[in-house]
View 1: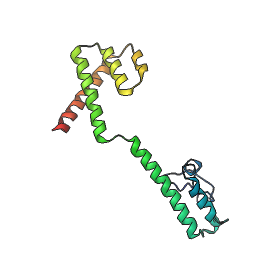
View 2: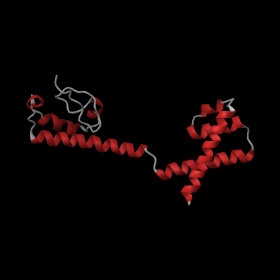
View 3: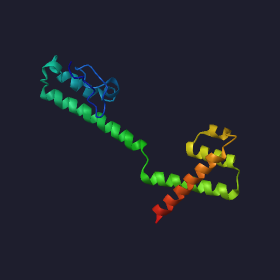
View 4: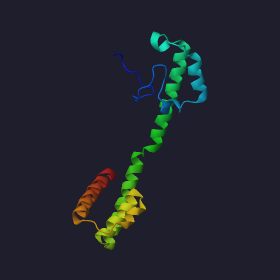
Length: 153
């Protein structure tokens, strides 16, 4: 049995028919002009003979490169920087410290914190939080505080 043909986009293992360069999801990211170039240089049966033209290889590599660049830009936009993560930790830690200083009850403390951390307003419906959950969370806060102090030195 022959080896299965997969999408040529970087890190994609979706099976596709041998005459196709990419899976549907990745092919849709390729601009129409590049798609047309790939098909213009495609020669019927080249997937069987394994004799693709130089023009096809150039067009195929351009399409593959385009998808790779588009996906790496998208990943870079979605991943927060180390500075953003550290700033978010500081904000959450300051919020926790102010809640503790004001002496809010445990359930209110966790309700406010859940809303802040998740941005989910449904967390405001929390009514009961177990003391064990509060203890685990406070331990995590202390570890975060130690981490922040170490990082700020």
